[in-house]
Image (tube, rainbow, N blue to C red; front, side):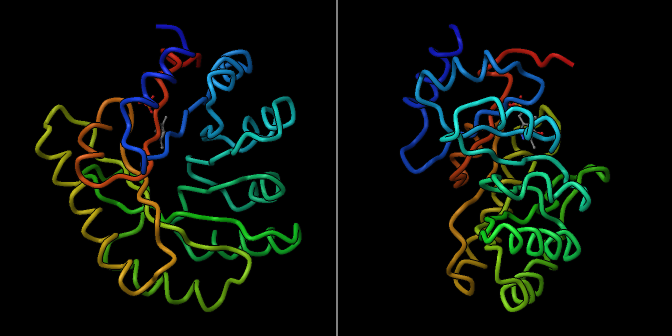
Length: 217
Ligand SMILES: *Cc1c(COP(=O)(O)O)cnc(C)c1O
């Protein structure tokens, strides 16, 4: 299957409520255009500089999602155009996003990244920190909106472990939604585990290599 066919495949396979983020990091502009011509409008990148360069070159109706870990000093470069920031995991970063969004007279949508994997190296907030962060952010920051949660499962062959981690994230999401009604996005699932993620309640999957092939590092 070529890139256009892969996009059609995923559009057919995913439930209607599930948004497909085509993860185009390291992929050339030509590959992104192939996906675009198949109707794909949401793309994910993990480096601010690369995303900004692609935004400049590509059609302006593309929605750019930042899925990587963001350094505060890079927020200003994407603030004019970024559509959703998935990997937010500190008050310091929220504060900077709010500041840069205000300068742009925008409200920037964000997701809180939650640590659900067993690996110690993965980024993210601990589950019991989410409630107080959401309360604080809702009061303090008027130029951003926390729309949901994002998480990555452990890199393992153990499907039961992956399912348990996604299930935990969905439980947290459903619980927080009762208090914070603006929460609507649960970003979980990549090429290797998106089917499990969907069964466990994902509303947004981030798929790279299954659409574009191996990455060009
Ligand atoms: C690269 C990346 C993906 C996509 O990974 P694939 O295995 O290529 O689908 C999804 N989420 C995040 C946070 C990533 O960095």
